[in-house]
Image (cartoon, rainbow, N blue to C red; front, side, top):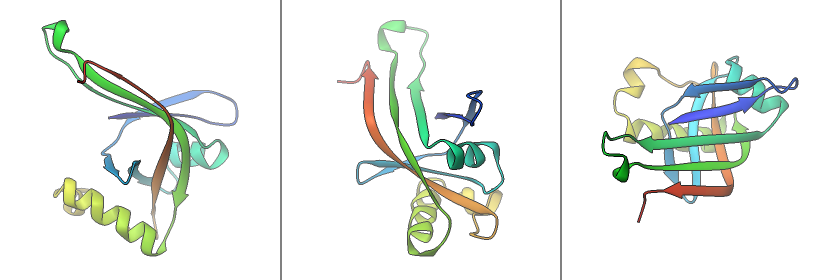
Length: 119
């Protein structure tokens, strides 16, 4: 997945993220001083795209989710999101551990969803 944010000046910032879907919301994480977290603190509007590429373009699939982000910095909600991410991506805990001292979890509440190639 790739997530797009924009800071106060409107400059777009697009980066890959490890995401998880739970309860109709999307979740991902960031360093608390990372550009995406800083952008979301200033401007909670966000877009996230997930796609599956294939050489046969008749089989391209994807989804674009636009919505509002909420930064989750600590507490039970942070630990729950971290657990969801660790469950989906077992290497996450070893390779990029999330601690409330240096990370934030992001909760994306969709306001618009556009999908293609998905039945």
